[in-house]
Length: 236
Image (cartoon, helix red, strand yellow):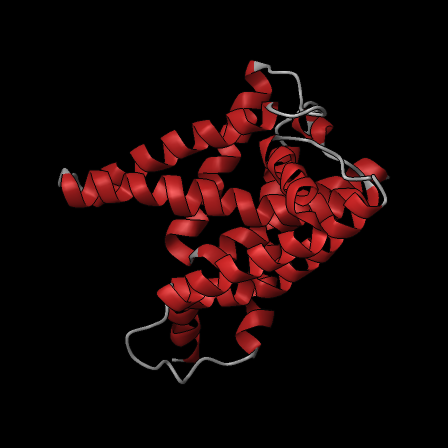
């Protein structure tokens, strides 16, 4: 029963965003610190947007806007009825679950061959790499899973009446194409190749599966932890 409640509550969008707050705070603080010392690396489109936002509104303004948006989303997604059985240990369990997913995917990709990690060439090592990995986990999942995937699922399943499985395949595939393409935008972005494109497309499909079955927080932490593992591997 406890496991069923854990799976149910952590899948709920409201708790998904709540559980993501620690990662968001760490990222916001880290990215402001990197910008302060002119070490904010631009890797892809989201890093470009982040850097421009900090330049326009300043570090404190960027943090306040992010917090306001997050609180607004949490308020809108609040459950219609109280869910009082939510426990603090769910956070620890979720981190362990996401770590298992990230390790599984890293192992699967590594076993594809010596070039399987070539798509990691756009990753920054060290502290900068870890912070940017957190940002990728948060904002790429928010954009490509919550917005793009979620909107396509709604259109295909609710509006056009397609079966849920067909809608999932379509939404996951299209959002994964955009997810892959965004990694080729930015000063330090990777050079486009068919191999790295399909590598990232597979990653988008993997994260879509986790988001669909386990919710926002699980996909965010899996994505972030996977990118952190890559960043640490690059720094070795």
